[in-house]
Length: 263
Image 1: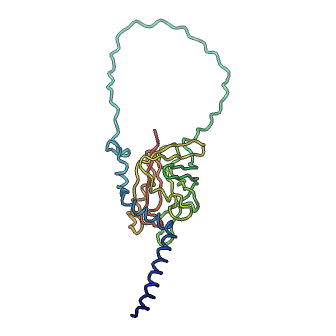
Image 2: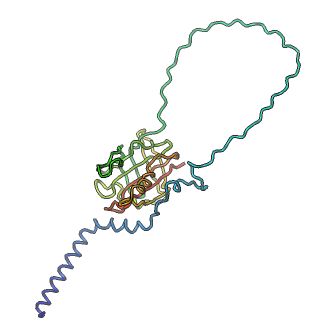
Image 3: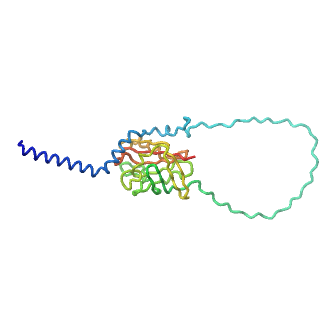
């Protein structure tokens, strides 16, 4: 290769490198969340089995906790003693009273309320909540159920999950990459962080993050995905479960954030 050809080749090579670096610089905002979530993934705990995750502070599962039987009290029948007959009591004559008017009893007020708004100050999240339904997957996975996720910057409330303020699991979902990216930064939330939910009754219900887990989802066998789905099922305790995909621009994992009510 002549010196002239070598110089021309170097010009093309360095021009290509410069264009590559320029492209990376211009598209860095798009790549950055992906790399950031990949780094964070190593710090997130792999989710234990659902039964283990429900273990309380004393090592006993709220569901499997032994029942405390009431102490039986023996009753001894006393032997009656002879006593003089009681004095005769004059018979009272009853006077009929006028009929009492029936007072209608109002129906009981529902114990809970539908969530309408969510705020997580530590990650700058503030978004409306809308009810979402479940739907059956296509013919390839007939009989399998998935939940609709809002296709705009809103959080979905599973409409068969618990209401705010009542016992049970209030399940919220959202996209992390497309269609509003409402849960894009959910992976950054830390344990003990505050979550504020506003209900239809305009009351604010405060929670704190208790656990953050990741679950392997994409490409997993059906039994693994069914085990994963237990995190969005009904529970006997009061909790809020937030669900999204992880990492950014990927569906490999499910990110699960479990919050408990502030008491």
